[in-house]
Length: 85
Image (cartoon, rainbow, N blue to C red; front, side):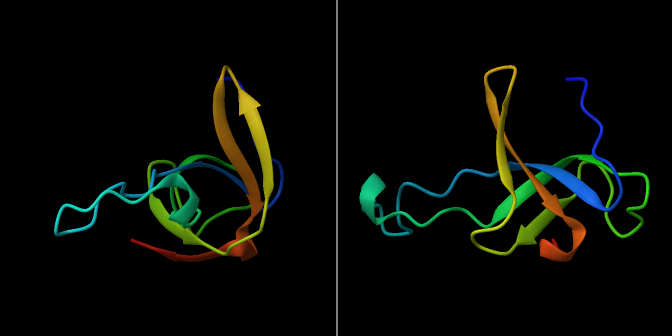
């Protein structure tokens, strides 16, 4: 992949939500929430708080969804990242 976020932007890849509960029940797609955890793929030159490879929590309904090389990513502002794990 050859994409470099600008400024205080971060490119993330969602970590898929669990499809089963701890007791083994399967959660249907319609009942699953959008995952809020993601892996940092690339960062802008002004980002100092997170680094590539970090796992982060991010706010719902933020960012711009992108499809690069047949994979889905989200480009968001650094302010939309809530915490690192």
